[in-house]
Image (cartoon, rainbow, N blue to C red; front, side, top):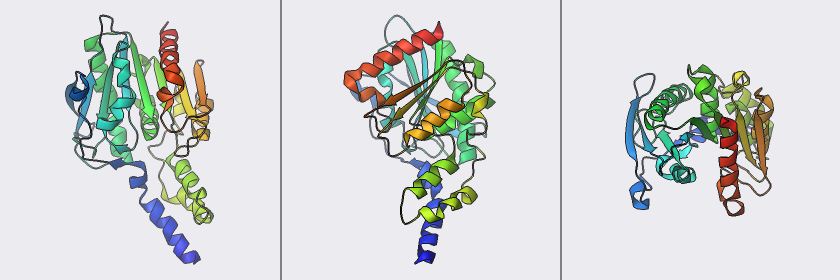
Length: 278
């Protein structure tokens, strides 16, 4: 029996590329169906892999800035854009993209490859930001997208252009989240230390994000069972920025902050962005 459980743990960890990256080729929704204007963006990752994204220009006469979305591990931008596209009406451009292997982006997902994708996406989104106007440049990482963006930012030559980093239901270590998932299953928890040997943190944020001095907001849902709130709190505590905030949502689950309390967090977020930029 213990041998069976051992191999179950090995199988679980051996498929962690599927745990961290679950791309879908399916096109779930078209922004045009929601009267949204957008531009298809094709750009090269740092190793030449062709990536695909969408750029939504801000509506209204006043362009406030650009939000760069690093989405979570499943599906693709055709589902994830819904969570942040409301910001277009608030005067913000939205740049969202798919990592390699997702939807129209070429290649196969891997930690190293997606790290290179993240660097390229930051550069491309800054070009669009400079072209379309607005003062604020904000990086918004969701779940696994938080881990990806938080790892890339310290290595990006223009990191000082970022006004605010948002970590929504995020984590900083692939090993730690895998350990937690094994530990949460009673029949696998004796083998949770295996995650420390099998899972690579070479392209995780945990050892580098302390270098960040950019203002940071960490959002955690206290009822989040996908990425428990302790991971977002860890990020908040580890960042050395003089400006940082921790939002703990009592009824929050996974990446659902802007659906709570009749949208009160939408205005709270806009107020925070305005204050950071001053």
